[in-house]
Image (cartoon, rainbow, N blue to C red):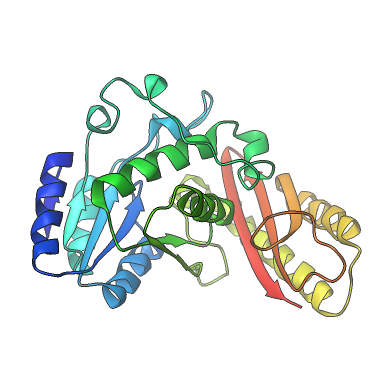
Length: 282
């Protein structure tokens, strides 16, 4: 596996592969890799000749009271994991390579509609940071396809809308959530949980499943179901931020005849913020 830290280095290698007629898949990450990330790489290997993975902790998507400084940087361990799943190139740029004038002075990409509400309520500016850095990485790597985990469901819809609106010739592939044995969605932030919190955490998924079961049985009082979900999370020991039922692609409030829904939730356990979601077809 090649490791490159500069934009020029990535472009040189991509150009060489293009001249050989190779297709390219891209997996952007912030590092601290777990099995969920590696599943994206394994899926990418099935889709393209070459797989590029980026590791970049993006300062633009962190708010002033969030965990940018303490977000784990484990480049050596991550590199070993990527070699284990046969990634072809790791792009691990320093911040000044991506934002040479500083991220506060950088041009921004905003995606209206799907980037509003839900996670954006507590994280203003977050999806602008995500859309901006992903657009930059797409222009650097210029892949045929890019793979993202479905755990960050709103983020995935933001990126899909951005790709459509800005006419990127890139296929966006969503990869299903990888879960721990007890249902907890794999996340880099799970390591912040203490033992007591880790025992509670799987109940987030259980509440999502209970709501999905109720919907599958014909319930359509979405507001009541959302309120019940919030109450169940509080009873379990969470501090919920939202529990929402939305139409799957647009993330708008569902009408009674909606055929494809997604249930989304964000909640804190202690200082750790967890998100999860569950799609269902009616």
